[in-house]
Image: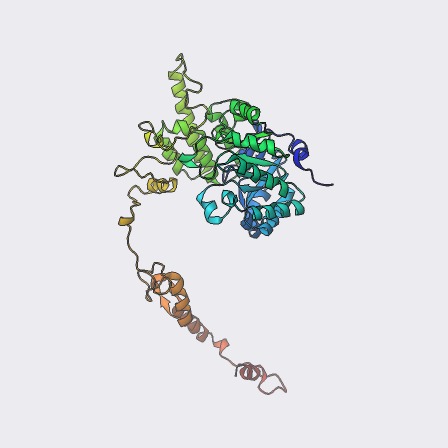
Length: 473
């Protein structure tokens, strides 16, 4: 049976999906997808998977896709990042039996994508992209789709989309921001770009960007004419977004934790989801934020979530009779996170932490990254000032820091090679080649049966010992 294409693929295989959960690294895992599907999502993507790692590492395949068959988790699109046509197709062939389509990530704007040369940093290499999509379209038994970011110019974005369609792309997701629009520089996504692409291609188009509530979804569908709307950050803060509901955070947090117990995932994923769900409440209860960052078990995370629930319910009981103001006035309700702009980021209200930093350094305006914040929570005395870091002597051979107690003044790698070659010891690196050899020889000398010559077989001069002796000679 020939594979379905274009609108037929969207209407029959994807069941005309309009509400779509985006591919999110370490965040759109099976448990989160199942939660989102229960609350209005009609199509989900896997997290972005690295094609080269997927091909070479069986454990990576098992952990990210092969772990279990879940009939509820369909329709499903597997997304890969790749920059080599052969590798992309090899990975897709290994994944195609577990999904309904394969998506090529051409939208990731992060520095890791720049270093790895994938995502949005391929958007100027049209020849390469044509070869990747064309080969996948020819070889796969499922359709190939793409997720892209726009160029500043609408006409170039349209030509880009048409090139991908011509190469064999069967569905296009357009994020209405350029690759430079990220973090505090995100700004608003351009629905005009998305609308122009939709008019210019003959395949289904999904829109991504500016989606924080169901009204945004409906307005986007109406204004752009796309077939579906994809949500990433809006979904993380409110998995019931596509239902048009804003439930109490603990309702969805408890449901998600129950799913995780049935479909386990790394604790870091769970913690990240709870940080997003409880984002607004954690601005109020800073101590519980720190506890959530430190707990080491799923039940520990559940306990912190339960404590947040109790604190919120106490607030609710104190506020009975009070008239709410605004659309979502209470921090314990699932609601969107409004990312501050470049100027707003440093003007967060007193006592609250911005998304990227707990606080600004008193001695300057530099804001610590999330990883540095975590390290500082574990060790309050840790400093990140380069001028205060200790200076290390370099290995004589490779330039890496040498071991302070190395007898050869080398790093561990170079020391191991030299100690092995010379059958020497280096107590500083815990390498005991000489000592182990001496112990081995002493043990052999202490075994008399190893020293006694074996009796010669009748009629055989010298027997076994003579034969072995001549062979050794």
